[in-house]
Image (cartoon, rainbow, N blue to C red; front, side, top):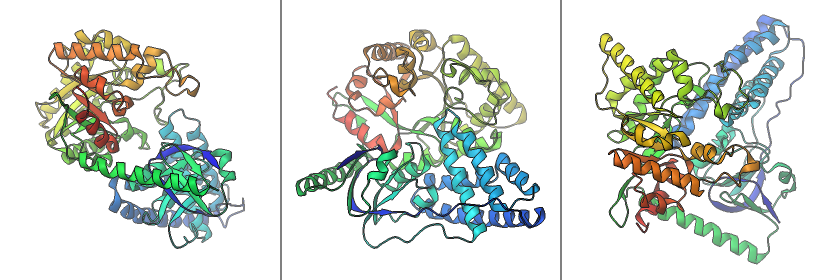
Length: 538
């Protein structure tokens, strides 16, 4: 029997299936013992939840500091003003603390699930997980069952981050869930822990066997059970092959990416936060080609101030020094919305006020980030990248804001480096067509193939119905990339690819043939891309 879900963490494994019993988070709407007493119960439970989250952080940090950040986010969610106000409203009405917590979390989770941004929708699971911890403490209940002896494949309707981090990677060979998505924190943890997983099975989850062996392919999303002897043997060969490929790629971690013809390429990492810098270094990245700074905002209950941003940028720069770190300025709008940033609704947000357009219209927000970036520059090799450029005027305006921030810092006696490089993202046809002009004003180009493909082919990158049209290898897209590379080199500047297609090794040969200088990919993909460069025919 074959079922298919979303392959979310690569690898293949075969083991007996084990279902995780979900904790009982049901609550009744009851009259409390008085607002003061119930408020005290809630505060005690929340303080204990904080201590438990700190312990989970320490456990996760031993494996990967990036994974551990999830539990810091849970603590932030438990301090979220909307959540706390919702709890207080229930307590003020005389309700029991369990119900007040449950209803407040449900309201916030429902709101987050309405947002277009996948990362923010993922926060809905975080608030349910974090609030569920408080409810279990209030109820005096346990939060999970015991695991059997031996290797297992874990199955659950949904797997919370706090459950995932406690999985024994020496025995848990994989997991499958009815719900979940590629961006969920449990999936991020699974990738970090090297556990194959398939999520989003939907109704297919109910067709899984109640016992017996289950085969999981975390790359293809396939699940197999009730296999014949020949099918089982074939899957074991597939699992052995996957393990061999992973081991072979590790040899490329410390390799220099140079083509047979002598063209040297930087293979850098795309990261979303401070913790990801650990993975970038571990997988042998030649630097950070794209630090998506908006994740600092998406993971914060409010606008991160200058000192908060400075600490984050400094940490990444110091971790990677002396390698370059390219930090993209705030790229909000379209599918990335902040609940605390009142951006007016737009009928077509992908073509609306986003990225550099927002930064230029919100000078105080942009100023704070630029000051933090400039101050951080003394701790490493910083490069600043402006996104969603469509005109020369935008580049000149952004550079003026940088000059103003430098003048402020100089007047205040705050240091910044004089060796910062500035670049622009080429992710619109307008930028590609104007790349000969733009190249005279910046130090490098970074081609964002996700948006460049979307805008060139008029195919929404988030719309599954036009997935067959959205093709980064389309001749029109490749023609714009080639034009951009030629104009960059004619003006003596570097050009890189930071979109998803940078990791598509079927395109590596083309990128090498046009002289692309940098490929920036997810940290785990760095060794495979280095291998593709070294083995290219260019």
